[in-house]
Length: 415
Ligand code: NIG
Ligand code: FE
Image 1 (cartoon, rainbow, N blue to C red):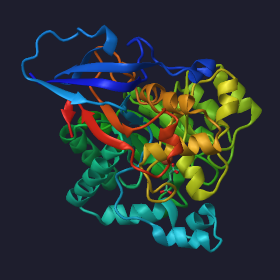
Image 2: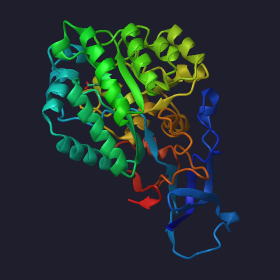
Image 3: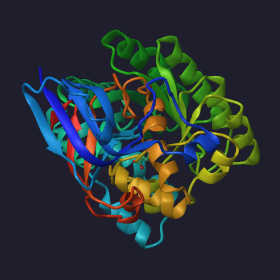
Image 4: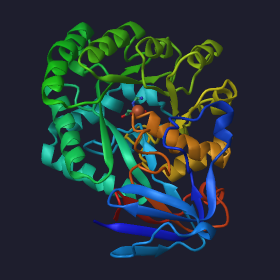
């Protein structure tokens, strides 16, 4: 048995009853913390916490590793509920094209974008994809991420989509951090199906999904519901087919245009609808009547210089929001959740408390992990990070671009 005690914690952040599943509307303004605290971990589980003045939690000191966190904060690790972290090559040439004036859509129209990544991924070996992604996972872990959702969608052929999903499955089995797999076969229409989109959708539904079911390759199903990508009707058909084999929808909607994707997500009981940079009043009102988690990706807005999602408006309507990175080679070449928090505070005007709630418990909900991740709660996974010395929690989003995380503990293991 391994046991860790973290003592003299300046502030233990996001302490919640284990039954809290998500925080909505005004609840998001409150961040529950304990000042001058201790936290006890046994194997991979949080077993107790409290204030130093009420010390007395631990009576058996055998094999107890003690960490002194004087002046430092302890947080639950971030949950990154939206990434495309399996990819073959970076796309800095498109970055330069955009600097010179082309838009993301213009680059896609001339064969760049998702189709560019698909060409590169189809040519990559499973082994290289696995090793490259493993390195990226180690990198995001250092910046405090303890659970990550990973999408397919750069394969766009039967073989290449399965290759991506098998890489994700291997990562799930071998990584310390928790991983969820999202099947995004409907990310773009492959070049060879340009004149036959029906043929590709049939391939997804009739050939990819049965193998995914048989080999247990995914938890979620995604579609890029957007002008020039998939229509709401096509999205609906794909989500219905995924749901039939037990996958839960989590979808890309309203990144550039509002075409009804939100409503399709609600109808199909999506766990989350993600992006939401372009929202109508009706989209927001419909979401407010649902249980779907709006998931916002400020690093994507930053990198593509597109509008930020209306985070404050959503919260004012009583909705919860989650924050994620969208780590991918085209629209967001960063998996750093601390930077996401800074952007959410600076450009979406979230308070640090709202941003932290969005990146922990609500983000855990957005990937179906709220029972085990996303807060400091007795019985939850011992996934926590210890910061550098800091005066207040606001320092974390404020001091952007600096590494402020000193140590990450995943499943009770010091990494
Ligand atoms: O979430 N919007 C769709 N998919 C990704 C970007 C994909 C790419 O450009 O490679 C996103 O931003
Ligand atoms: Fe995405």
